[in-house]
Each structure stands twice: as C-alpha cells, then as structure tokens.
Amino acid sequence: MPNIQQLEALTTQVRRDILRMVHKVNSGHPGGSLGCAEFFVSLYSEIMETNDGFDMDGKGEDLFFLSNGHISPVYYSVLARSGYFPVDELNTFRLINSRLQGHPTTHEGLPGVRIASGSLGQGMSVAIGAAETKKLNKDKHLVYSLHGDGELQEGQNWEAIMYAAGNKVDNLIATIDLNGQQIDGSTDTVLPMGNLKAKFEAFGWTVVEIEQGNDIASILEGMSEAKSLSGKGKPVCVLLKTVMGNGVDFMMHTHAWHGKAPNDKQLEIGLAQNSETLGDY
Image (cartoon, rainbow, N blue to C red; front, side):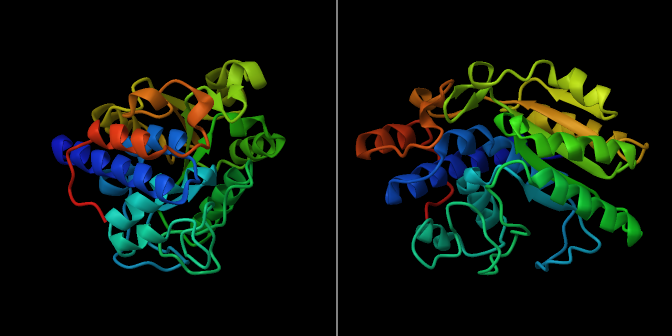
C-alpha cells in the first residue's frame, strides 16, 4: 500500500521547488505546475512502471509524455526527486545553456525527457505514436500523457483523438489537467469546450473522471481504474479536475499566475504555506 503521508510530504517539497525555481529567474509558469504536483508525484512514485536508468527507447517500461510543456517546473522537480538527475541541477532552471529550459528539450539529453514540448497540441500525436510502437514491439507496457484543458482548443488534438480510437490504441492513458484556466482567462471565456467527457466518449474513448485532482488518494484510485480499463480496445482519457496554483492561497483559482513569477515577499509567503521540507536544493 502506498504511504500517502510520504507522498504528500514529497508533494510539499515539489511545491517549494517550483516556487524557488521560478522566483530565482523571475520567469516560468507556477500556476499549472502547482496544480499538477500531486499528479506528477503519484505518477512517478506509484503509477508508472519504469526501468532503472534512462534510455530514449523506453523498451519494457511505461512511458510519459508532457504535452503542455510550460509546466516544466513540476516536471523537472519530480524527475530530480525521482533520481533522474541531481536535485541541485534545479538551480539551473531557465539559465543559458542549462538542460532545464523553460520548455523541455531533448538536445541536451536531460534524463526523463523524451520529447521537446511546449508547442501546444502536439503531445497527443506523439503519445499515440509511442503507444503504437509498443504494440509493434509486443511491449505490454503503457503510455501516459498529460495535456492542458486550454490546449484542447488546438485542432490537431481532435485528429489524434479520432485516430487513436479508430485504430484501437488501447495502451494509451491521456490525462487532461482540467483546471479551467489558461493564459488569457478562464477556458470558458477564451473558448468554451463544452462537455469534454461527452466529446471523448463520442470520439470512441473510455473516460475516467477524478473529481479531486489535488488529492493523492483520489488520483491513485482513479489512475488504477484507468489502468484496469486499458487493453480493452479503446484509449483511455482521464479528466483530472485540479486547482491552478494549488497549495499557495494567493495563486489559486486564477489565471493570473499562469506565467508570472512571485516576488521576494510572495515567495516567502508561498514557502511558509509549504513549510514541511525534505531538503531544498
């Protein structure tokens, strides 16, 4: 059984990492990163089956693709805290010649990162390709991906969503971070997307909803259900209902912190609200 208390403590540390990384360079995307901290911790600590070490082929293990690459701070923090690269490398976030660019890249060979992402709408297509490759290689492991809800306004997603169902890509679990916010405002204000559950189902997917997307126990339960539904002829979509900026009160429930760094005083407040530390870098 997973130790929820340990996972929550790691999540708190990840939130500290996010705040400190973005503050140091006065640049980055804290809101969505904070909102997905519980998901990333759960994914890398309990959900995915991965090999020791890292190689780009990813044979014999589950794979993860981050489509909404602007939430790189949470990605980097969890990769580092999971042993993919030294934790103190988080100090180099968004610096010139760093392996930890604002949007993940592959040319510097950062362990854990399989695609360059941040040009929104492309991750679904890449994940489908990886999932089909696993089928061709008779590899029974799964492919996971994460997408922003605002990102679904990009048309390429829906071509890919249609393709995945039509070709029975049933080893794919695509999670949508459903926080209702994007850079210019709420998703309903910018471009309403209607009932995403009904849309994915109409496109031939199986849908799992996680109503408490910032609760680790709920995430583990929902993702376990998603895994149990894989391999049954349909791709699986997880609608993860999160709060942007979760864990830092003045960043929550608003698009204002989509891409804005905290100042010195705001950093102090945010860290005080996440004071239980496993060890800052």
